[in-house]
Image (tube, rainbow, N blue to C red; front, top):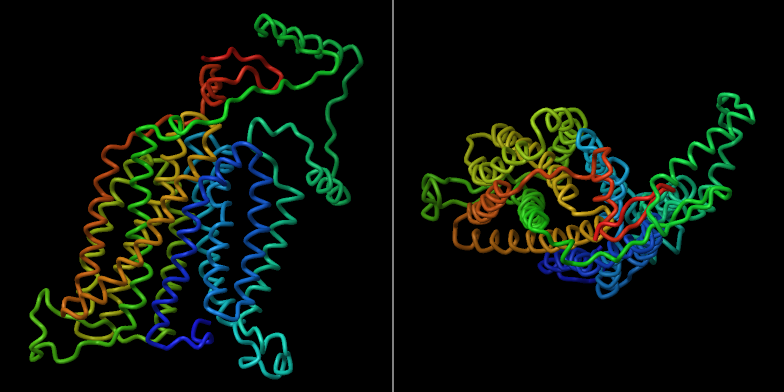
Length: 495
């Protein structure tokens, strides 16, 4: 696409990096605001609003005809991408029990992996349709003028499906907004009525119903503090009084450690994934034994010289392996051994895989080289599949109250976006310097240093209790220090 803007071939990789970086940087700037908005206005309206914004900016990107507009569109798309942290918050609010969190938090990375496999395939197949499918689109003036619009139009169709499902069936999870009237859910129930069977409940006599209502009213009155009156006839749910979250509550010691570990992980993991295809495609360095620029074991350059088809095949295996680990291996191991012990083990794998990666190019044959790099990739995949959801669970459980969870996840997305922008930039720059100086190991060993730093941080983390439990005290904690009563049952205010 960037080549179509009449950019010189030697400059394409630079501007492609800039176009990708502005997305992450814009996301870093706005994610906290999206998180705070979800804490104030509710999760559902923020998610739907963000989806509409991303859909619009994606269309703007597809219809861009200059590099400037493409960069502006990607910047706006990053600023609109506020739903990552909010959806993560909704998962935490739906599943607050620690024994269920590994299964719940493995779903988002799983569907992300599926999208990462099929999304680029759709994009590549649908780009420039007038040249690829002249018998169908050869006469289309629209796609001749905008050759990269079709992938984004198809993406917009997926967005519309997501918007429809979210509007009709997604339930609000923010405690203070659960009771407001949702016309989308009402319409969704109405649409599903012809396809659902009514469950037969137990028959109640009038006396039993009045007795049950009286018992419930008596219990509420017995637990109501002085000065609070509940209308039993209207049976209204009490509205909690909630103070807005402060940044002092958000940035607790454990939350800060989790955010640091998460940002370092995003930096080196994403940098590795983006640098690896460049390394695979880079030409092989032949005649190493007589080459004066080679001084084994450290001074050498060269990659595998693979074409895009072979690289795509290796990454497909990488993605499928990740899906299997995410769904079948991570939940039971995390439940059995604990989230924090698993994190400590897998973070030690990252620096080892980074240090080994450049030496796979020294294997004697192309077959052994590809087998070697695939094995290294699978170890790295295993570590990443465990590390990201483990840190997400630990970050969720480090929040002092559920009411700050949206803001906290917004901060996490913002900080990780900085890492996602800085990592590839550092990797690309050091790769260029390393090739110029004859040391191809340079970018990988620098990533190994970041991986080593990321492996140290988990040893200061503590696995917090989270928001599970059935006691009144635990329920008070998850409602925050200034909430008075929720769900029609009084709770003493904790000042």
